[in-house]
Image 1 (cartoon, rainbow, N blue to C red):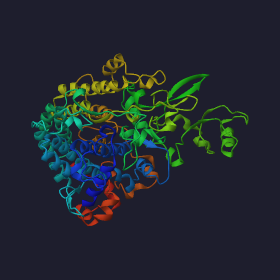
Image 2: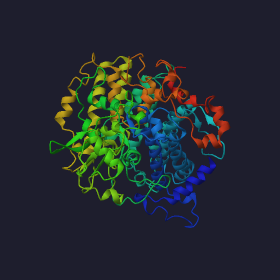
Image 3: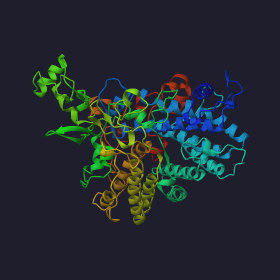
Length: 622
């Protein structure tokens, strides 16, 4: 890891963030800058970016595991295989790289620099990021180098998940202590480097307590460790409103010419845009859409007012009139669509004279002279002709010349050259989508779960409803900033619709109606693309009946899993077997290639394909 530290310094000194353009002006030598020359504010800005990339990439990839996201079929693609629950090592690597190379390797120098100038608030923020990053690695991999991770050891030993977990919780307490200290006026103000909370120390303290509540609640399977009162105490010191939560602002900025030095993505855009919205091959699934429309087994059939803000639409001509038509979500759990090489991305164009166009004309019953622009699938396979009903999550980025030319002002709606809307995009994956690192709504649902377990269902009901309302209000804060007459999916949610939904049969109205399933279904929507959703699904064993019945109804392993005989990786044959479900990521190639002895010693299945279904430490009752 000492090599990683040196690599990271070189990368850090190569990148220039738009918010800190003068960050290298204190170097002793511009030819060979020293680590000590990097100011704490500039180092924090970099650390925040790379941690967030690691964390949200893990969230995006876990969304393929938890039935939110799928993609066009593509043989051998790591995302394609993850959607099929046939994972490959390539799916596991980016969170590791971004955490260790981009962020963790900076921690020792950051602590030393901040200590030297008594910049206590930077130490507090760093301790939170450090704890959060290693906890992400525990949730992702199970075991990880920790105590020796960024020291001098070239092959650092592994620590157990439980050891890391407890150390990370303790680091939050240390962080709070530093954040509560008064900095001398000579120390760098936190506001100069804090891209998350604008230097608001109280929001950082609330973030620490909120993370503690989240992590302690993840111990729900450990009867000897699970402490509901400790969770409630942490919640009482965490964010009490949307304004106190940690939500990161992102921008669809034409001047965003700086790129991430590790992956080359824009620096100001949301991480989910970089991974999803920038591309054309991602789609929502039916299981996720059913949560929004309440059409799952036992659902109320009352549509959630967030639905059209999240599910994309395309502009289609119906009886000569252009209308926005919502995507048909893809049923990856029951349909064979991806085993038949679908869905194929639809084109909007005039058919040509090539062989494929001739075949498409024949499939669609068009004359050879029909040159009108239309949606069609460029395939000779008649089974794929209907794939035009699937709308991808694409948005336009102003920093890309080709995409900017298709934009109407600052509107990121994905359109053709003649203005036809190909996708309205999705709230969570636009270039300027808010980075919802820890929301007040999530804390409300944690509170509702804990109180429900304690039997205090009246207060749990209130917390559950507060979680739903606060998430809609949080979405509205962003939606209200869009000024567009083209894309109604970016309009704010009407207050009357929020009130009507909260009073409908889709939402528990009394303690007798409240169930753990209702709490967790609403939390799942509010935490879309968060790694925490995968943590929660593992805690409740997906759709296996348990103490609270079936918490995630209709959830199944992907149709492709059985079709592709994927049992060598996820080995259980009945859903009551923990090995029936996807439980962790196996270690990436860097650890397997360069630290294999310690990796093997950490876990008897470390190099076996069965490791994908081995529960991480908090995911067992033992």
